Image 1 (cartoon, rainbow, N blue to C red):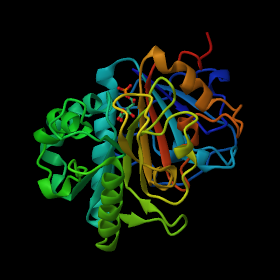
Image 2: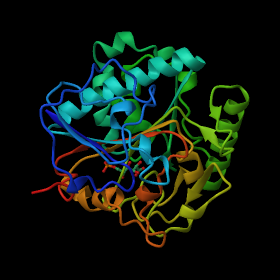
Image 3: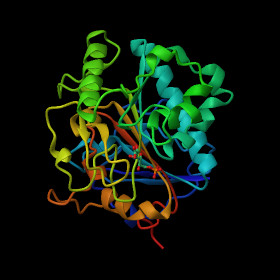
Image 4: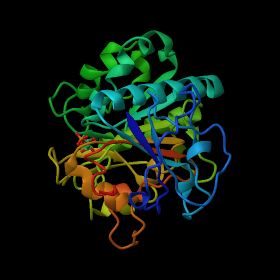
Length: 323
Ligand SMILES: O=C(O)[C@H](O)[C@@H](O)[C@H](O)[C@H](O)COP(=O)(O)O
């Protein structure tokens, strides 16, 4: 059982009644293919269908917000299992779409609980049906530690996901762990630039930054995403693709991270956020009271031209819903 909410950046979804009895369309549809718009008000759906992934056509709002809010969605799941099933279907469908359209699928991972949420992709039917040879895997942020260190996001992803699927090892782009934070950020940015030249990574003509096909992100209880923390000067980086931080409030202190211009140039973002500890930032991000002065990092993740889907559970949206 799940609930899907249209979630423009300005949508006060909490204020809407839940409409029942509407089933989601067949889950084989790839979100974002159709662009039909259905009106100016945010809509909220409750669905008993096994997959809550609704096409953008059904979820779109009509420019209620001045950003890409018309392609934002909020999915709320009863269980981690339901979330993982839906996230696997969503990712597999995008893999098929981008493999067909551009012969490559560029996927960006974060650390944290996201990796567990990808577990269903390592099982049938996806293990066999996904064309893993098209995948190119990147990290939105990485801790500057050796790849075999317990703090390494690469190790987390390798142990929990990458070692279980047949992605060609040369298409998994870990940081150079022999370098300093500065050096690793420069090196990673140079690697991305080369892959743009080779046509593996798309470019956004609109922003001039790389356009990853799918970024699979988590959010911390303080509203941070990637290694972009509240109030940190890196939030304002406008030139670099990849930068570094040496004073991360979340240990370990030294990290590299994508910048907002890169995050916001993506074609798709899945923001996977569960648990009551995240309810505050979720509420802030999805409320219509955004001001430019005190934005949390998660609120600054606004796609220039893409589709942003929140994969959440009920505790995470508990401050949004009508009681
Ligand atoms: O390097 C990191 O520290 C992670 O990439 C981090 O940004 C993570 O994605 C969030 O903190 C959410 O983590 P959880 O989902 O485990 O809360």
